[in-house]
Length: 122
Ligand code: FES
Image (cartoon, rainbow, N blue to C red):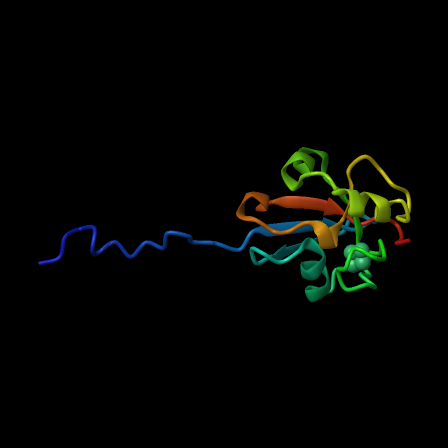
């Protein structure tokens, strides 16, 4: 006979896809489901989020995937590493929470992440 534990079919991870919200300069929002291990840039491109160009394809060599991470999320995304910092110098209207979205890896902890797309890319 089965025990109650064996009959529990409740999924352990009902929604394993973290959600990311991109806010356009005009205030329009795009919310996407992002697979863990992908990047914030890849999800923008895949979901046709306007304003993310990603000319170098994620090699941290173009600064056209620039976003502003919402302040409350900045610590969780972690700051840019030295290579990203150098490339950020080429980004349009840098702010303290600027990141290159190709360098932000999606993790379960980033479920609910909000980033704003700048007026234009580099
Ligand atoms: S896609 Fe080129 S730096 Fe991010």
